[in-house]
Length: 325
Image (cartoon, rainbow, N blue to C red; front, top):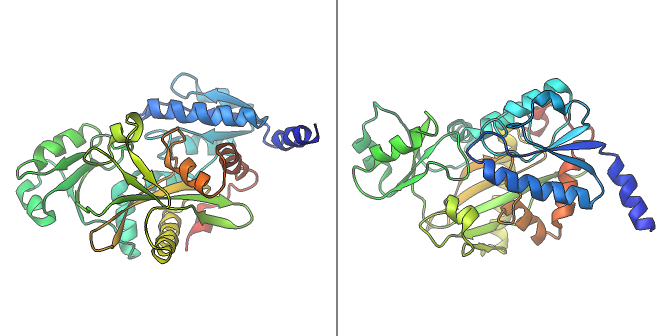
């Protein structure tokens, strides 16, 4: 009885919580699953939580909510748009602020920022209708990856394996975003570092996960539809190497100005060198999602993870610059 009472009192500090889910992006279906999982966890913890889909409800209906758990993915939810609206309404929200969300969503500008700070990222070239496709193929080598700069969940990504394939891959990616990146292939393994911020101890890196897809790369199908993708945690790296990468992932996260929680993806080459790919400021929270897996490996249950993320909204909507350095 006392435990239930303590939980109830603790949950009341959050007030009325909107779980933002769905939205208008190409990642809508994934967001609906993430939001449903978050909503269920909050309710199990006694939080007065309610689903809110910005694609179906006008934003002014958020008035009266005390805070928001952002489970939106992709455009309008992960790119600073909803964050700006919430700032104007004075509603604290989970995750990164306007600037960090906008930069983090843009893989090109994230890479430019990381390059200035000597944070290793795979070589790349921007591609457009005027590009010399053959020259880019020769410069980056084959295979190479082509991706929209402002999409997530591997939407619009192509692995180009044959000469002359870049132009077709660009056409496909450009349907999702006018900014298209051609990126050098790094073939030693795909990994991710979950990041969680605690009000007392600051940012921490969760255990690294190695991702082993059964199809050619970690595409949308491997992420959300297949059950044969392997997630290895421990990831197989030495303790020294894992610690090094975790520390650099925190640097990469801070460089973008991120806060609260997120994920930094990286690749390894055959020689054991690592290259950071992108930062995710609103990662998935589905049964296939990586941050909950890493949190579990660190002894944090899904429900506890959700509460920790929401807890950061209590008096911590400070300037993003506090996480720089």
